[in-house]
Length: 256
Ligand SMILES: Cc1cc2nc3c(=O)[nH]c(=O)nc-3n(C[C@H](O)[C@H](O)[C@H](O)COP(=O)(O)OP(=O)(O)OC[C@H]3O[C@@H](n4cnc5c(N)ncnc54)[C@H](O)[C@@H]3O)c2cc1C
Image (cartoon, rainbow, N blue to C red; front, side, top):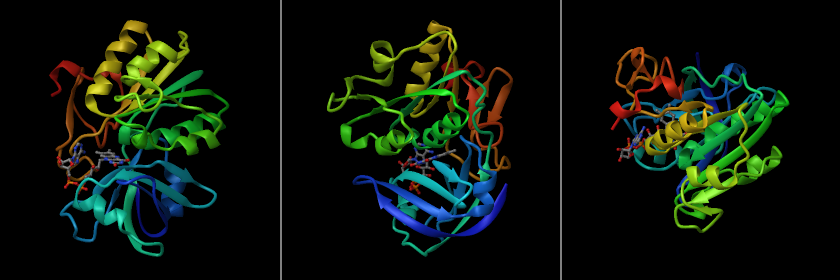
């Protein structure tokens, strides 16, 4: 973990309410591992920093990319930053994904998709076979399709309203379209109900599943204990022991 006063290079509108922020942060980019996140300062727009997943880290260019939905005052502040604006960042934080697998299938729901981009790029660098399934409410909410295409991955898509891909959830798409074998490891990030459904699916199919959890977070550094989740080994902090967890560890029936 480190802290860097970074400078915004690009702020790209992906659709009506999603932004991609690329910042120059060579110290943090050098440390970043897929699945980790950073705490972004909001210059007083909110009391607390905002936790945002690392969507890409380019260690050669020294850049970090964040993709987020403008949902409240903190993310709106970040979404309005201009190129050359300063941005104070603490990161990388938490334990990221365990990339050890032969074949990977990544599953993203809505704004849970961004951390899977960095994961996909690292797995590709390690010459692993990578597939991706993306789910969203509507076609317009499917994120980063071009970026996955640049990595040579064509996502299988599912939308709630059928405006793109399979009509239904990512589980529908997995059942109807995905090629799964016993050596496939599933990696997922998205809303809790999606992760819960995937935990059931992976159990049924006897597949390993690693999930990236999102929880309301105070400090993001393991001190406030505001983001704990029930696990087979007691309560664990999403920000410190996670956000990546083996799905078997989480007591899904005790959550929401
Ligand atoms: C480890 C981690 C990684 C994250 N990565 C990303 C990311 O890559 N992209 C992204 O868009 N968001 C991500 N988030 C969520 C993001 O931090 C919140 O959306 C953000 O804090 C909202 O701040 P705000 O001030 O804009 O909105 P607020 O005013 O704080 O909240 C606006 C609305 O969003 C709801 N909300 C706020 N935070 C959360 C949350 N964590 N979960 C569910 N609902 C929430 C509130 O109930 C409220 O209705 C991540 C969260 C965590 C914990």
